[in-house]
Amino acid sequence: MPKASPAAFYFPKPSHDHANCVAKALGEAEIACARQGAQFTPLRRQVLEIVWGSHNPIGAYEILDALAEGGRRPAPPTVYRALDFLQAHGLVHRIESKNAYIGCSQRHEGGESGQFLICRACGQTVEACDPDLAKAISQLAAASGFALECQTVELTGLCPICRKSLHV
Ligand SMILES: [Zn+2]
Ligand SMILES: [Zn+2]
Image 1 (cartoon, rainbow, N blue to C red):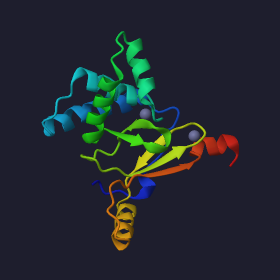
Image 2: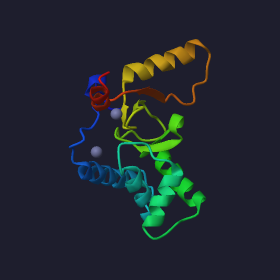
Image 3: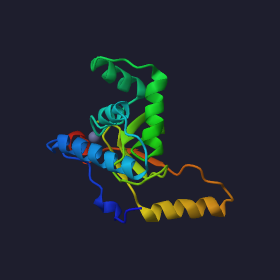
């Protein structure tokens, strides 16, 4: 797990070079798959690229629509299988409250995930990975005799840009 303080996670500026985010994510995914002996097939790559189309979570049917625009509309199970693969390899995370997926920006392998700051106005979502928070959640579960299966935290609010434009 990467060590970083919670303050190190920023909402991307509208002016940022998003093509760079996409290129970086795809490059890292290739390396992660190779290291885990997993096949980064063209469809898996294409789905990951679509998920990385923005910093907003995207639903499976929107992914299907985007694939259809590219000339092929695979059956929904094909897309779900690709998403399962990407999720299992820590390349995307599922945002339960949105029933949607977001590209992983934290490079952790396996099923672990962190905390998501979700802007309710623009939808931009930032992934944080605060080890202290993760520890606190594990301790809470242990103290309650609770077998923790998923410790993803979804936080809803307003990102700095929307706060500014809404004067919050
Ligand atoms: Zn970006
Ligand atoms: Zn926002």
